[in-house]
Length: 129
Image: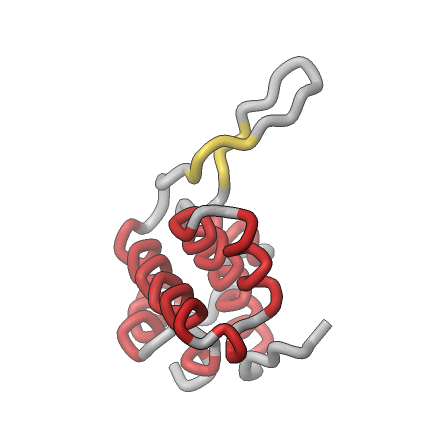
């Protein structure tokens, strides 16, 4: 739980719920698979060689997905009040997209980070390439 709490927007409740649901995360091959299990990846509606991504699928664990989205909503609100503390990626995303869409995009990214932290058994490092 302590490792997960190093991720911005993930608190004690979210961390304990994730640990209770998936354990160490090794049942997923990668972070995208974990995010898809949560229902945070966009639906693929491609046809005829044209790729089109739709809304998120919402086919996964509703409780974990809502906890991640609420945590990211808090992070977006914090970014608006203190832009100097925010990540550059989130700031540029909020300039281009509506706040709710940015919140879900951050939840997707955070789910992938959660998987990486769990499988590597190392704290979150925002400067890691």
